[in-house]
Amino acid sequence: MRWVLPDHIQDALPSEAHQLETLRRRLLDAFRVRGYQLVMPPLLEYLDSLTTGAGQDLKLRTFKLVDQLSGRTMGVRADMTPQVTRIDAHLLNRQGVSRLCYCGSALHSLPSTLTATREPLQLGAELYGHAGIEADVEILRLLAEVLRLAEVPASRIDIGHVGLFHALAARAGLVPGREEELFDLLQAKDVPTLQVVLADVAEPVRTALLALPGLYGGPEVLERAAACLPQDEEIAGLLGELRQLAAALADLPISFDLSDLRGYHYHSGIVFAAYGADSPAALALGGRYDRVGEAFGRARPATGFSLDLRELVWRLPARGEAAGILAPCVDDAELGREVAALRARGEIVVTALPGHDGTWNEAGCDRQLVKRGDRWAIVPLQGE
Image (tube, rainbow, N blue to C red):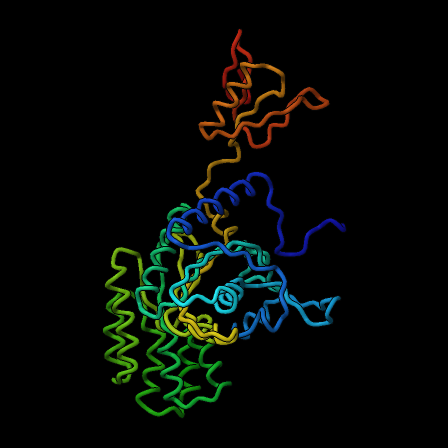
């Protein structure tokens, strides 16, 4: 069956495609009115540009091919954020704050979860040029608003801080290989194995690292963290940033997880993940990544988030398949005026000719326009 698609690659049929395009327009309009300018990076780039500064995980997810013109290795983007960072650092070259947004297809060599697509329609927003906590607050509020507009509101936004892990790992004197092993164990909250791996780490750092998997919950977690982490100026400052977020975002469903370190090679500060009421996997991911711009010749403070638009559409409230009104394709002035008026009100009206068996194509419609005397009327599709 040569026409069968690869695993985790899907077509978008009319109903889903309409939802995707409608949601894409709504969310990009929301970005625009908040000052975020749209950019459209290319689907392909040379590999060294596409994955520079993005960490090993992104390199493994990137499809690679050879450019027939130059002979150089190219990649199909797996994440648009490094591309947008390149645009800000290398092409726009602005001195102040820059707000950029984007939406486009990406391609993953492997799915991120068992049910995920390998061709996400990635939508996101990035804020460059402001190192203060105000930028993180703006991005987190924008994320919450985007999910609300998509009708898939966040039930929980987990927040962590990669800086805490880096600070503790540096104090533990771990070599890079052991640091990555520690990162994996913290992500899995595997405390028994952590106890073995950290057996030769001096106190109080050992106790602090063992405490991280249990430091999750509401803002009260930050006070518990202050009590069990080393009492020094750097760690106190990092916890202070999280306290500022807790105060500024008290009206949002935020929580804290100090062992959630996703993307620690890539991120440099606050990281977050948004979850829906029925979503075991995160709907959106984001955080601060101040160092990535260095790879493009210009380090800039940066924070942002991205999500898969397909994932949001799959989680939209069920509205049924039927969504339009079926109209016959005939030359009738009264029918033409009726169709125009319905479309002006935002209705979907599908005009069709009868098929070879005398029936119409009813896909996507639950009502029809039929002639009643001298005028056209809307009736249920299955009967008059």
